[in-house]
Image 1 (cartoon, rainbow over the protein chains, first blue to last red):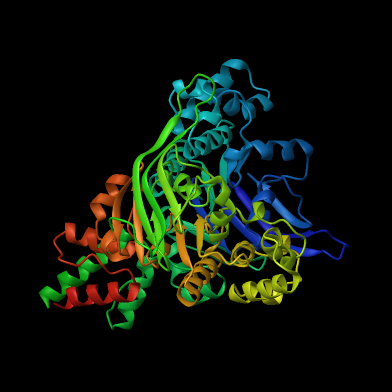
Image 2 (image 1 turned 90 degrees about the horizontal axis):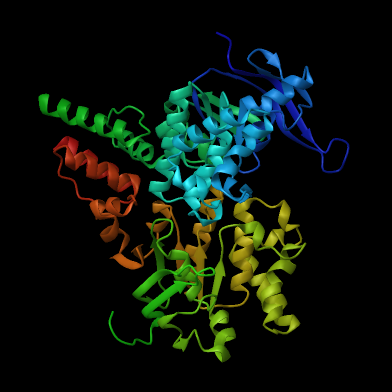
Amino acid sequence: MKPILEVSNLNYIYSVGTPFEHKALDNISFSVERGEFIGIIGHTGSGKSTLMQQLNGLLKPTSGQVLLDGEDIWSDKKLTRQARFRVGLVFQYPEYQLFEETVYRDIAFGPKNMGLNEQEIDRRVREAAGFVGLTPEQLEVSPFDLSGGQKRRVAIAGVIAMEPEVLILDEPTAGLDPVGRAEILGNVETYRRARNATIMMVSHSMEDVARLTDRLLVMNGSKLAMDAAPAQVFSHAEELVQMGLNIPQVTQVFLNLKKLGLDVANVYTIEQAVAEIKRLRGGAVNA
Amino acid sequence: MEGFNLSDIISVEHLAYTYPGVEDTPGVPVFEDMNLKIQEGSFVAVLGTNGCGKSTLAKHFNSILLPTGGKVYVCGIDTANEDRIMTVRHNVGMVFQNPDNQIVANVVEEDVAFGPENLGVSSPEIRRRVDTALKQVGMYEYREHAPHLLSGGQKQRVAIAGIIAMEPKCIVLDEPTAMLDPRGRREVIDTVSRLNREKGITVVLITHHMDEAARADRVVVLDKGKVAADGTPREVFSQVELLHSIGLASPETVELCWELNRQGFDLSLDALEPEECAQALYNAVKA
């Protein structure tokens, strides 16, 4: 099967020909399969947001290509428009973009713009609300009467209602408490499984990306510095710190265990750490 | 910490606060009988889920909100005393989540000068304070830069400089790192921790990041308008079940030990640093 997204030799320069000219993306290439959960990490200004906006045609490459299902999204106006629906983008603090009188109408805004009929819009609004755990009663209230975490879920539902094959989220959990974070990440994972959708999540939380993603793209100074599984990425602790990032605390614990002379694997979630410590103690008892 | 104490810079006594209702709807009570004292020179982290009242409490510390019942004293001054509001605000400075909402000038040093200018400080004194403040947050070399071109962590440090240029006794920071990358977070927390240690400025840090709270002298956990836990980071974070029941979590080092204990280990729950956690695990495995 063709990859759902393929980015090849992508370059993007802001404000070409002015004193503010700045290369934001430098020869980026990668491809993404259906159903993958990908984390994008990188310091502020590394090019993460610019990259996201390339993937659904909000920004046009200076050179290089973005292929959606094998077709260049800039080869035809129709394809560019389609890319905006097929690749859904949830910006940072999306709750500030809510504007309708009811939650229902806010979620319906995207599907309406797609030119769908009332019945289909209704189905999509209700399904999207279900994915993010909003009740039918909540659909009728003003979005401004909801809590911050609920508002954010309404905003995400608005994008899910367009049924994107690729859902891109820019720091979906910023400013939320641990329960709020877990809920939103659970909603996203439910959507991925139900639709075999691809998720691309920009995050500054190494713990969150470690727990959820299959693969990490690490952006550094406008370049794609790493493209690998979390275990491999987090084994480069020093490089990550130099890039202004860090590694999950459990990974740091295990690097210290290595220094103490234990032969341990690289771990990056608590579950893996528990299994590894139990294995070590078991081994010690048997020896 | 019962009774009046000169060393308390902030004293919250039987605080009640209800947000005003809209039209006919009743208001939302946040606090009914909240009590808390903060000692001068301490570094206190305040944790709690979204909606627990953290920010509402912080806004009482410099008269942005006034109690609907009970009292809040800052340096012994009743925050509801209209004649003394400027004194209260002079003593307690606030830094908010979004650095972009706090920048008022086109040049870093002018931005930092804004506060002391409003206090009617003389020009030579403003010059001295701005230079000192920028040096204290490590932004002196950027004094002639445009603030909007700085990174998030740098912008927050400029915002902090703007506060310390008013020479407050206490700084209250409401989720100052929620929008920052890992390096930006480190920069901001290192800065406030240094101001506390070296300048004796009282720091109240509201955060969702447990690793940041672990660097305070004291952690106060709020739940449903009440103090649910209060102690040193080690004392508070070892109460893992309590934190989970509120919807919070401990740092990963503690969560790991707690999970291992549930599976038959007997580890103490007070390791907050990766090194000490690794040592404890090493001892357990080798025992």
